[in-house]
Length: 349
Image (cartoon, rainbow, N blue to C red; front, side, top):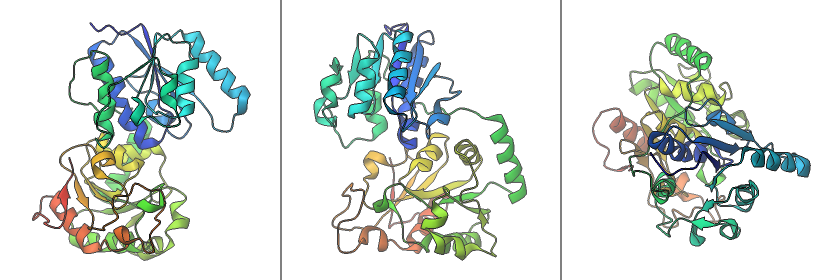
């Protein structure tokens, strides 16, 4: 058995993709020793990822905008649990402060070089410095090794939702088979494709591949990408933009044939449930935030300023995404589905 204390607290508030990837730490702990109780502090948007998770025993919810009173209640709740170890996987001031105020005698965080907002000052111990450009799953697994647990391969687990799964099954039956999912949005503007390209891609994919095609995304994507939405109206492409909850999304991804999208939370969920991905990259670095696994495909063009890792493009023209053609993405989709290899792209790993 491991030397873990009876109770361990993990602080990773958001975002969706980050929480999905950070869950490999909880999975590694439970695989080593199922006895210790694992608590998790999370924001509302990512809460479905930890509610009912097989490796998370206690969920502490921090609602945004709750003010000082909500923060105090949360700290009191954490202290009442008497955690023996608190792990800050977010490396910002508020996550580090929560880990420290939990009352745990041990507060483990990132090394100074990889910490933000002086969060390293609130840790009592830190993992050793390593490559900040490594994939975030690799960086999270450094915590596993620091704790002396066996350095096994990362294991992605997400809760199984029976009702959402039944809805996904019904949709797949209605579609006539496992769909290709095209996800419109990305929280960072610099990661987004040109409005209208996904609509064109969806129409051409519906003609080329023997699988139903669905356009997916969040409610805001209907406003952000009107040309994409308009392009598929009256076609065989199914419009599901804004129509699925987070749980329904990953249950649909469990049953899908391929995921095509950008560097965003739904991409990480797709990779976590084992779905092959074709991801368009520009400003972000796929080595660090790409889909986890070796089977995925990356579509990108050689813009001299990329990857810049900026939230917004600061160049006169957003060429890393504007110059990314539909034909290149179609070729990567064909390669991912078992067709001829696409020489213009690359394999993620």
